[in-house]
Length: 637
Image (cartoon, rainbow, N blue to C red; front, side, top):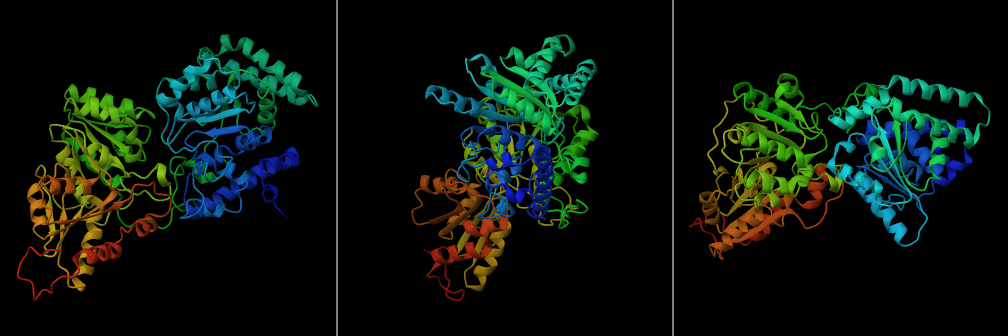
């Protein structure tokens, strides 16, 4: 039997379906999402939660003329399936395939690109104001989750409700959690709205009355909301959104398609800012995701029947090692405080939160606040650790510079997902942190070669009297011995991992292991390569740089953009000392955004594999002398 989904080549095809067929379509979309994400990995729970809302939006509004802006846009899988990308959906998050986020270059239905939270309302306001300036008539809709609503940027935009905008819709998709359970006053406010017994009893009674009347029509729907609004001030604590200039509708069941369709049809005729509050269930329709929505927020490939990830990991992840080490240190130092911006699970702080609840703070999607909060803690004698993804730390640039570094405060930044993160693509690659952190006075920046060195660096960081950032990659470690005693790390000192004469490979963090493998390949070609693990990307170990320069050839390796990165710092050091006789080759990421794909595929593409590194090094070492012919350690290029 043919599927209804196979009949949908654009949103206009939704109009051909009856209500019962649309509800069957929703089930098919969920099945397609689960089937695909089980093979590709991706954001599962959030996408399963917005299927009916997505269908209702596209059935009611006329995209792409009408603009639908998705906050974060990790929940756009149903949107992609409906907007002509059904045949490509199997390539989701694959190298050269479809992005897991909204991407205007991919489709005219993607009104605005995203990947970070709390941006949709601001972007949609820009589209709406531009529409009014040129006399357009298209609708503009922003869809934002309750988690993203904890971000200050969202509120900066909401404050514009009184700005004179005439036609603008914000849909608050409230599933009561983002990646981690929501925190703060707004979460409590929304919970009070949802939980108000008298309001909800009255609302359900009105719904039952309307549903009993055949062909109730818009008049009864309008009447229903006039009545509810007239008593809302008495039954619901506060009129938060209406005070901001938005006419508030809700909360309503975000999985009730008939209700959503009727309500959106009513709201479509409004000519002022409107906020529709819908309640959805993360992971709806797939039992494992409903039970564990956090695990299925950004899921790896998994067995569709059991929900278990595949393949099983063989080594602890860097994230797990960080969380375990921080707990160990916190047992010995009561000043240690852990801070996360709505990423408790993602950054490995769940064990810390359970063991030290009084010293754990989830501040919501508010990275700027997290950093200033940490600065205040440090000023008062605490040892705060801000655990954050590299890509999200970018949002707090000014706070790191102005509030932490300027005052030389001992804040530790545990920077997870540094480097290439893989299938999430350009919005999530952590490849800019060395550039912006490295230029900040008083900042110390480290990168471990493996999970054991991460542990050692955290011990160093928590004792250092000033700001420290430790950047480490996503995923499994390399299998280093975590049972070995903690090694004391001397400030600003690196280590020689392998001796060599012809060329020195200076490898930052995750590139140390590939550099060692490349050195083995070079040895087979008769080239003796020294491998240096700098450990500190700032300050540089000048003694080791001088040793590297004695080979006459330096190659820097980093999983980071070349412009302003580790290699740039080494080249500047050579230039300042006018070492023109030393050849310097920088290998890293060029001045371009890197698309999505597996980590291995992206390393191949960017020439960061051991074999590719060896080939580049051979080119600068030729011609070279054989081991028997060498008479000096200072071979010239």
